[in-house]
Length: 418
Image (cartoon, rainbow, N blue to C red; front, side, top):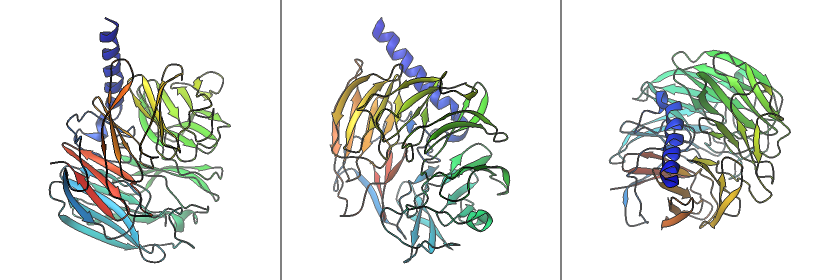
């Protein structure tokens, strides 16, 4: 009986997470960074085994270089990249999901050029957003573009021309957030920082909130809790929630260390804030008001639990973290206790994926480890799938569709599946 109850609770938790995003994700699509924002999908028949020579549907070389994840709507994969010595060329491309055939490529001239280009200064890093109307892309030059599904320009803006250049050592990494009628963007850097909500149809601001300068590359999370649409931000010292309607700050926790890269992740009850600093990763119960540091922090992780580039993943009553060394740690979502640890083939830049009863861990050097969850809360490794990644390159991101995983390297898309 205990096992049956555990299965039911796990299913309810996953279903609740998906219901929060049901109005924008539309099953079978992967419309934004981490899909629905939590890197979960109910697609159960994703590929299990592949290599350089087996299980590959197609490979395509991209027009430019990029670190963003692909997004999928219907039968089309969209991806962004940059080109030129100073990232002065911006590219948005569309490919056929089944065949990999290029549908179109759109090129823009960047409104701002960086002083330096290298692997640790963002290069086409923000992931775009896609819906039935088209694709919305943001670049670290400050250019924000909306295209229809055929590549026609709907509207275009330069946020750097409007609000000032982006300042910092590593560029801009925060991706666009998808809501039913708007896109939300966090710009935290050494200069004037802000959180902005933009109407999808017109490109006009719905609201813009000024923020203290704080360098961060984290992407916020959109969710609905108690019928209230909100944006959860985790960024260099602070975790906070903002009302989607008008930007009102609902609750906050301050004094967090090194939460500069991870995106927050949530189920229907709790949000997980990841950090690369020991004892700074935490669970915050949703629904608070004002400063909730003394009332709604459910737990702080122990000394050994940290989260590197990839964001935390919630599946059922367990939270999964991958640290800088490539150690996978499974933590009880109720109290933060470590259930077990495993060693992955390497560290990850891409966030992990939960698909049915499988977990996918995309290691930056190319291998993807696939684990199966057992009823006793442990995991069994089902496969380790190698892909050759050139020296200096990395596996940056992915998107999923029925029977497909589309993997993004710097200058290449690789579709895994029949």
